[in-house]
Structures are given as C-alpha cells and as structure tokens.
Image (tube, rainbow, N blue to C red; front, side, top):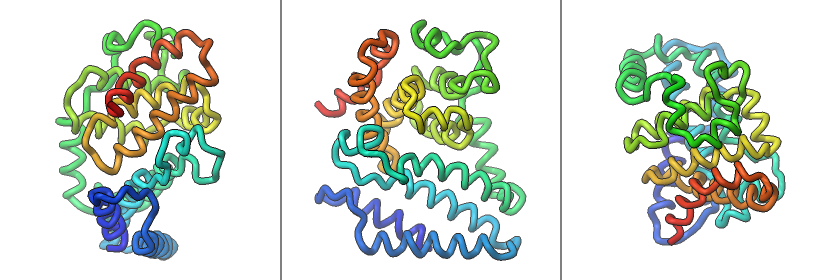
Length: 263
C-alpha cells in the first residue's frame, strides 16, 4: 500500500501546476515505509500467498526509482552532473527485481501474471531480432557497433540494445515501444551496464536514442528522466566526442527529437 501511495503522490505532483522536482515529506515517508516493509518481508520465510504481492511491490519500487529525478535541467542530470552513488539507481534496481522474480515466481503464484506475460510476449512485443531488421538502422550505426550476421549478445555488449532499437525505430505503436524499453532494462547485458557506468560514448549514444523514442510518449513516470538524461547525454557527447564523426552524425536523431520537445 505504501508503494502505491508513493507513486500516486508522485503522479499528483506531476499533475500539479507547481513545478517541483523534490520529493514531498509525505512521499519520502511512504517510500521509506514501502522499502522497509519490503526488505523486512524478504528476510522472512516466504509464504505462497505473499509471492504475487512481493513481486508487484518490486515492480512498483522500480517504477518509483525511475520516476524520481530531482534534476530541473540537463546540466543537473546524469551524466553531466557531479558523480553520485545514486547514479543509475534505476538500472541497478532492475537487477534486484530479477532476483525477486526468481524468488517469488509470480507466473506460478498467480494465473493473472501468466495471462499478462502471454499477451506481452505474443501480441505486443516485436518479433525476435534478425539480420534484415538491422536495415532500419543507418549504416554508420551498424558500423559503429559492429553489427553483422555474426554479432550476438555474447560477443557484442551493444547487440541487444542496438537490435532492439532497430525493431522499434520506425514503429509507431506506443505500448510496444514502452514494453520494448522495459524489456531492454530488465534483460540488459552486464557488460553494457558497466559501459554505461563508465560513460562509454557508444553505450551513451544507444541509451539516448532509446530515450528519444520513449520521451515522445505521454508516459509520465518515464518521460521526465528520458528527456533530461537524454538531453544531458547529447550535451556530454557533443562536448567530449565532437571529433567522433560517426557519433556526431548519429546524435542528430535524438538531438532533433529533444529540440522539438523544447520548441
């Protein structure tokens, strides 16, 4: 309940006329209670009737973490801002959710989850990536990331994020784009995560392209971070990699979208 209240209060703040990026005292209180209760429950023997509720709470806490960004301008957002232990918390949260998924096994615990996963997989997500789908990407993109018939997630840390982007780049189906982005987060290759943490330019470019797709959708808890961090990445790459021709060429796509949002 505290997790639901936290997200509801965040949504109310988003809808209010007052531009405030800070958590209210009430939001912080319920977020703390949700996290405390969640961790306390995980430390105890798990009962069958608690499995679905625990997984739902994990998903809500992941949403809250992604939603919460106090930056008001790109300069205050990662990767431009001063390094902090909270950088990419939303990404680390996805690893925790994987462990909770294994522990709670919601597909076995509740038939509702099985039905949702079937719809998610069969009807809403694009089909698994194949070589022809890479044609949706510019040649500079394929060259920069070493994408060809032999590249896989095992031998190329950029592969999954790049081929996933190729599948939704020209797709005008909001729910599919959202689910593809959430799938990317939950299945992101550990090597790609480490590259993001090190602010690797190719990893950053991929992420800002994803942000550019996501930020065009009116999904309140996704959009603010996608816009601010997407813009911050563009500025970061312009400042530090201005002589990398391929990077600057490919940066035109997200830059154009972020500029259109500001106009």
